Length: 175
Image 1: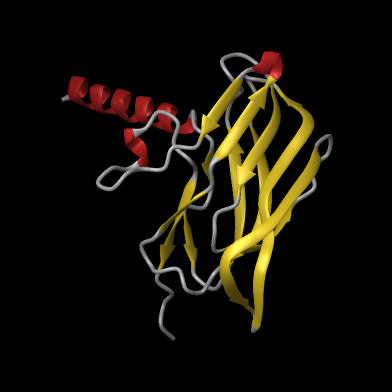
Image 2 (image 1 turned 120 degrees about the vertical axis):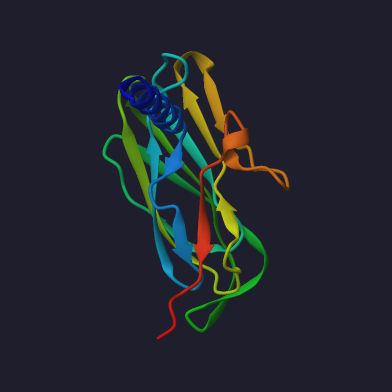
């Protein structure tokens, strides 16, 4: 019994270590039509190299993006047109931030940090939809980690070595 428990504990620990090795979002659920605070967790550098830049692609349907300033880092906001116009608090929006870039800082490989931004999830995204945020992590000596894999039909993020962070749209409780 003890041996089985130790094996189970070891497997759970290995799974947790593997999961924490990726760039992830802290909150993995969001509601359509509501605000979402994205906390992007970066748990390591690139194979021993320090992280110096984080690029986050903002997916279609995530609107009104506002990054949180981060001491020691510069933030760039690339803007572009959306594939369609969305209703944002009663007003149509057809363009906005499509990529965020934090650069100029230095996050050592053995350190952990969070990169935070706020947005609004479009009201027409169906419950059960997974919304992916591809991330490119650039490090010293031209090292790069691309957390950009979006699962094909029938697969999950766990099937990929470098999955893109995501959240899933959940149904809002009825009042």
